Length: 292
Image 1 (cartoon, rainbow, N blue to C red):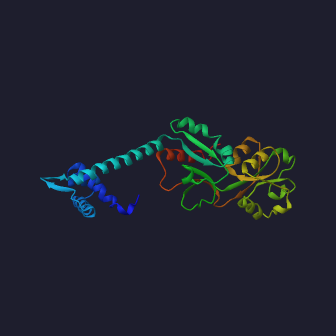
Image 2: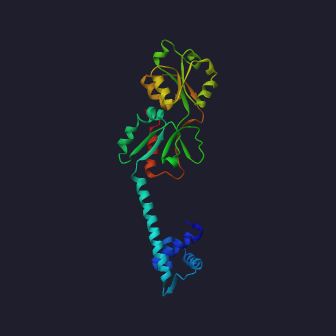
Image 3: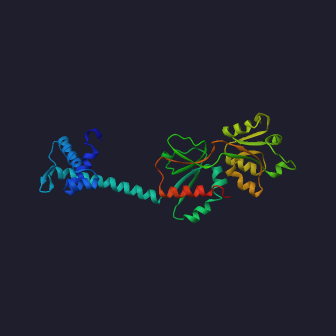
């Protein structure tokens, strides 16, 4: 379609309303503009098309044969657009919400709590997408992502869910009789770290630990790191929110805390894309922070 050949959409909309209402005044009320604005749009449309579209008829207007032809086409076209919009809006209110999370966050934080959401909000279906790849919210149709980082993702809205505090944890069987109080007491043990987790590496090295001097096992995902730590294969540094349940249960031992600064888990959405159902999910997620 050659859009340059079409008159302005505002003029077409004004004329369709005027022709349907048989009145500039009622068309102005419907579109929430002035009578003069409707009249001006119609005059400009008549000039652009070189056709008379309406004529005065008492207190209202009458539509010419050329105007009837255009008005019928516009009403049909706008009706088709309106129906498509209605279908999309209805779909947005009934389809499952799509929540993108990392596998580690899903397993360690979200899934132990998700039953509460299902119980409280059975009318809101939720599609949880655990993925190590960063989702493109617009392209992938994701309503919300929970991402770990500093909260700065251009073109997206990010709201902090959990803080950046990290715990150094290890399986109690790996410690034996050792009672560590700092990272230096763990140098004789194997360490576990995810590939590309440069922030955690930097946190450890700020404590004076040279990771080149320890036995380091690098893994592809943080979910694998957590599973290996829970099985007693090494020391790991994890966001507090992912391991506080294990520490409370005694399956992992907290050695010390590291401050991650602005790092944390953030709720990430597209600007202006927060529906009532998504606000409900966001409130529930915030309400779960601190709940074991």
